[in-house]
Amino acid sequence: MSRMNRIHERGAERFGSVFSPARMRSLCSARILLLMTLLAAVSLAGCTSKAPDSAHTDAPHPAGAVTSPLAPPPPTVLLDVQTDEQIFPGNVVEISLNAGGERPIAAYRLSIDGADTGWAKRSALKDQRFVYVWTAGQPGLYEIVGEAKDEEGQIGQSRLELTVRPPGDEMATPVSPTPTPAPEAEPQPARPLLARGDYAFTGPVAVTEWTIALPTYPVEAYQTSAVDPAYRWPFQRFDRERFLMDAPEPQKRIYRVVMLENAYLQVLILPELGGRIWQVIHKPSDSAMFYQNSVIKPSPWGPLDQLGWYGLGGIEWNLPVNEHGYDWGTPWGVRAFVDEDGAAVAEIATPDDGRYLAVTVTVTLPPGAAYFTIEPRIRNISDQALQFDYWHTAMLAPGPANRPSADLRFIVPGEAVRIHSTGDPALPGPGGVIPWPVYAGRDLSRLGEWDQYVGFFEYPAAHGPFVGVYEPAADVGAVRVFPADVAQGSKVFGLGWGDALVSEYFTDNASAYVELHGGLAPTFTERAQLTAGGSVGWEERWYPVTGIGEFVAADRAGALSADAGEGVVRLAFYAVEQFAGRLSVKAGGREVMRRAVAAGPETPYRTTLPLELVEGAGPITVMIEDGTGAVVLAYTMEQE
Image 1 (cartoon, rainbow, N blue to C red):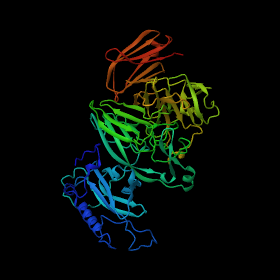
Image 2: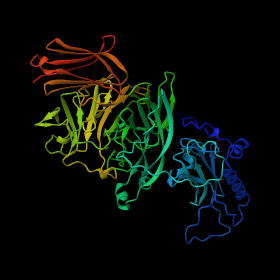
Image 3: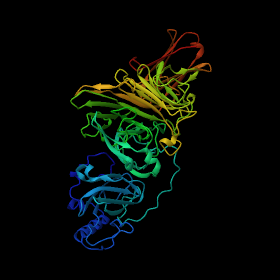
């Protein structure tokens, strides 16, 4: 089996019988011993004792349990591992669980060094088989534990130890697994950047898959299944009061991560948690674009008949109702590949389970570009017209602190906003319209001017073509470029500053975030509509921006900064691809500067213009032109 860690189809037919000769030849000696022991166990199911076996132990009976020779034994579990005989960091290890017994098997669970997947119902699995893909981590000894539970709650267990060898140890003679000392832990940054370090990647693109263990609160015990009949949409109601009363502790669980990568960006997707884009890392500056929660914790927010929303970070897909929709924490299908144009692509889709709306979000990372696109496509597959909500929510905290500073700026290119909700008594209530960005002497584009939480929509609808945030403390930001004629909704939300909502609502540390929402309708009180069989879709471009100061305009080519002070006008341009063109400046209709521009994601362009050349001459217009002379970005600033 190839040691390349890449996405591939994993149909049940791929695994075949666990006793086939071809499979047996590929297994290490420890696995052969395990299979022989299990076969013996099956043939001696009526025996009351077994020979000791370090690779396979049944789960002990609960303390005080009464056993009977007539009681059915626990399930017999086969832990099946498909890999090379020697495993190195980054190798793909395919693990499957099979079990049998006198009672039907109800659920499977897998743990790797104590981090477990949680119980997976057998009836919900593809072909009713449990198959897991693990990407080997750092060198050392790993304990793999597979469990199966029958319909009466009896649990059988199987164990296997796998050694991950250090890189460069390929010629070592295979030996029985022995512990390898783990490398000394390095200090962790404030934000757990997942894929840091391998920035020597030259591309052009790659699609890879790995796993991560995240502390996760056990919400399943506090959920009940429900269906929204208007959309035939399944969801889980959350009993927050009982959850708070019991105060359960989080447990580590293993989640898949799908990564799209090129020379400039790493785009990380979590299929099992709403198919969200969890993080985007800008490799030239080693900076993260989105907020990244370190724990999966249910919050008091979400749709009123659901609650329990995860403030996990990244971009999530919210539908068919507003306030984050129903599917922020459920598994979505993810198919990742390199397309015929050489781009890394992930197609993220709602489950095909009979719901009336089908959604696919295509995420594309082109080669040689520091942007990615998202292309939502919503289809009404029912036989009647539907009104619905669609929004995607980006949770942002650019920079290494994983929380915004008081100086964080919301860059919204409009003149008025409509309040959605706020705890600030100095602002109008829901529905109130105020000028943007200055209201009652407060510059609301600066987070530190906020008191309590605020959410607002651009008024009367999204201005376009962009919206963004900028963090001066780290000189990084994020940009969303979108077609405002289709995606008419643009919403901003922040937890507040002077009297902000506390972080313990959604996390276990002091991290925080702000939100940018994009949707089909201008506000939450207005709704999108599709006729029976109808569909709607559009494309947006998202990118991190760094190294130019607070930007004032953005479009598909990049972001522009223009600021006057200390006797000069400071100009800067961040390009999302390698760019060669010109910058021109006009004041009062007269050109006062024209310069060649060479810029790219690693090298923003910066220059200054003496203020005396434009002072008093009227509005200043800055234009970026490409090599053909076409204007790709323009901005006009008024002089006081």
